[in-house]
Image 1 (cartoon, rainbow, N blue to C red):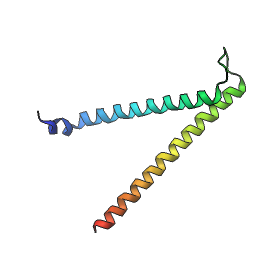
Image 2 (image 1 turned 180 degrees about the horizontal axis):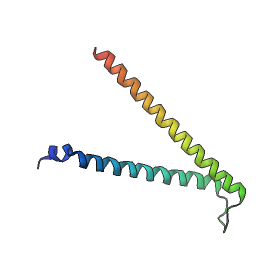
Image 3 (image 1 turned 90 degrees about the horizontal axis):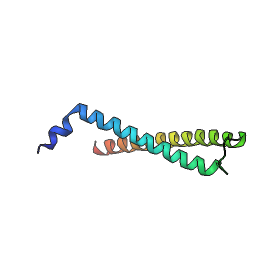
Image 4 (image 1 turned 180 degrees about the vertical axis):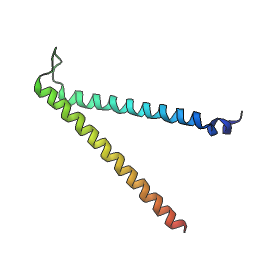
Length: 90
C-alpha cells in the first residue's frame, strides 16, 4: 500500500488537523470542567448560589488565562530552539 499518497493528500491532512483540534478542544473543556467543578461545587442543588457562580466564572477565566500563557510560552521556547538550531547549523 502506498502510504505517501495518503499523507500527501492536502484535503486529508486538513481534515485530520481540524479533527485533532476539535479533540484537543474537547479535552481542554473536559479538564476545565473537572478542575472547576472540584474547586467550586460544594453540594449540587437546583440553583447555583452567587458565590458558586462567581467561583465558576473566576475558575474558567483563570484556566483560560493559564492555558493561553502556557501555549504562548511553549511557542516562544520552540521559536528560540528553532533559531538556536539554525544558528548552530550556519
